[in-house]
Length: 579
Ligand code: FEO
Ligand code: CA
Ligand code: CA
Ligand code: CA
Image 1: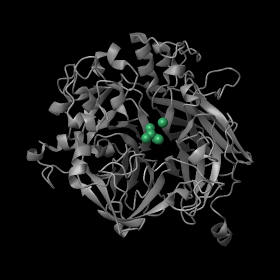
Image 2: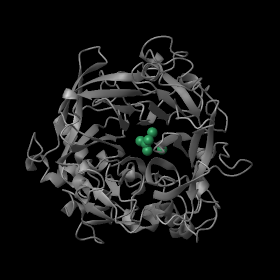
Image 3: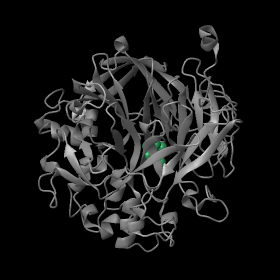
Image 4: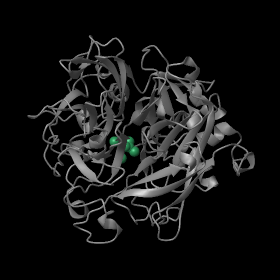
């Protein structure tokens, strides 16, 4: 029996072809159904979804643009799903497409952001959302949160409304996520800069510019109706965003904590693991062209189970940034984790870092000073469940080879990289706490039909039947299957011809085989994945179907406006997903 199990191939499903349909397609024998969608009620007093729902209604409904998510078991047939709500699409959020904004409109947008916590119940073997769940909760762009860790109370975090620099309001642009073994949820603040702006003349130095802060916002208009977001009036407010936030999902009255020890940047996800001597290791990507990959290692050891000793474990430890080295022409090599510690390696007062708080608030600048490698937009990191190995998606980078600080190198080997790659590293001694590692590229996405040879064709494990671009969400299941989600160019033309809509694939990390598992509807991104504890239900996110008014009516069909949604994926025979 053991022999049979050992020879069983890791990937057991039939590949699906690329698709341009406004539909979810999964392999034969699988079913994908909507679990919950933007605007669905989370409380008894919440109205049903309508585009005309106001801010008050939205704050009682499932948020928009669901992204990373985690499953928390509460019992054999009861669970809690924590889901990020990254942002909104004004073209659908408002009946007028956001043409005329108002304080009420901005309040609705703020209420659609953050995190949705929704209880699940298993009825007749199927996990379903419980709109009356006692632990259902909405966390939005205005929910009070504690700033904790080394930067808490720092002068740069103090504002008129919070002279102590210890209480921030809300979280937004929550991209991906993480989960701790002590039962908390980690939500990661990504492109926070786009919500700030000013009609006045804010003072924006190089440090502000490094985070993309500018008088002109990304078009959300928050600063026009909520002065907290006006950079000229509240220059320290953006320092209170760009953090990883820890949430206790089991206590709806708990105050989320922004863990400043994990650094301030455009956080993608927080991949949690434990090193050989029992400390917490959290791998972190900073998703911007030419930014870096980080690692946090806690000072103290993780106590078993839900021990309250873990409550503030993420407040003390060391943040590191990665440097990747390779011999000329090689796509593999060695690397180092460089510590972001005040007083060491030039992170000194003379160089603009008065203390550890300032190192963490301007982690990007500190990383540059240490000689960190500029990467092709680090998105998610995933840690292999059985081998000391971590994977990170580098989604694409049009600046590679063009900007002076982003030269071609072994880890980022393609100029103007349109397709992305997945890098992986193996820590020395099989210990995620080691400061050195070996790395290689698990795959280079590419188009072998358009590019007959060279690196743009993709690595050897990419072929016309599995090609895709812009890997983003990744995660392992217990068997060690690597699930890969895409957020790429879905034009299906030119260098992207034959790739179709955004999708999810599954890879065998040992053989390198990559097989397409799911294709999404028109103009969506596939992002966010988690499993039930028996690995027989998979939850997958469909984000911004029909963005920019592309012709999608997913999931309601007919003439309905499209909505982001979480899918429940099961097998008709009740088997393990992917096997
Ligand atoms: Fe929100 Fe980098 O993706
Ligand atoms: Ca992403
Ligand atoms: Ca992305
Ligand atoms: Ca996204």
